[in-house]
Image (cartoon, rainbow, N blue to C red; front, side, top):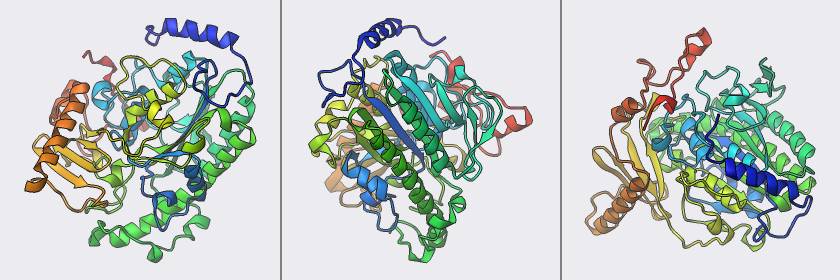
Length: 497
């Protein structure tokens, strides 16, 4: 059974839902906490913040999201707290940092004891639904996930992890027999989500719908030909920080990456059209984001690699449209946002009490009253680099609206002025005329770490603390042995802190 500390909230929410007026849409959520907005959260995979038309990319075609950006608030400096799948998703659902939950590696199990997004919204009277990639179950990548391990989501058409976009497997609610989407997965998933929205558009209670689309994550070659033909590799421009050794490889991968992005943009556009058709816009919060980016040859790091503090891996898109956005539509927020901030901000917008142990900051007031001059320090971290990143040093970093600053156990490693140097090619560490700025950033970083009781230690400390073990060859949590019936669940749930 989940934590019971929220029992009183459950009872009060049930009473409130029983007597609330139905089918009433007010022009503003403010002052009306009894009428809860629907939530549609569109989570993509490996879609970096620069790979969109509205972000200034000269090549990629994303007309539907470009239009949505004009109707939304754009957090242009949003970052992934740990730029890789499982840690981001765990932080998104719990509002906590990876060093607190122990969820800092791929393919580990998010403990049942954690209170999650779906559970909190259910307590407030919401229906909950999830589609697509999950990557929080830690019981292998294709095994059935029973309802008690779905962290509060009731409607369920999902799988732990697959990137077979042309024949993607999934499980349909309580049916433990593996199913397969019958078309390119972003279109198939969105089609099913459209039906769910249609079925629930007139419900008395609101819904939380998380639509987790696995594109534009590799393999890039599997993007539909129609979209790949839009991007001849020789025509694609490369960022100036892509090293010569990766120029040819990057153009080849960008063809499929952008093709997936354009196809996914089309799928998302049809979802947004359905929301408008169903007249749900005026009482629905819609978010578009991603779990992380990817390096794509920048800074001499090959395509597909993430986990790093450079913007290519860490900076993600984050658009949010909320009821009565009115004159705020199309505005840009320069103050960074990091993953644990998302859950408390959504709770704040929905007038739902925020549990005290949530560590992210409630940015709902900034969302309703965007100030382009506001600044804050958003925390990024990699506690235990794994897989392709195994040889990289662990780090803690902050992103402000102007700077990126990172520290490893051996000391500072990154100091970039992202306004003057958007491709992060000029490391300013140790510059005499900027030492005061560097020192200020160091103070801010350690202030953020102190808030969550974290310090910068070697990977071995955290692996031992949480009793994790890597496969000796792949230097990652072993998920592939589950196919042979030999898998072992690794999870922080058995650790007493």
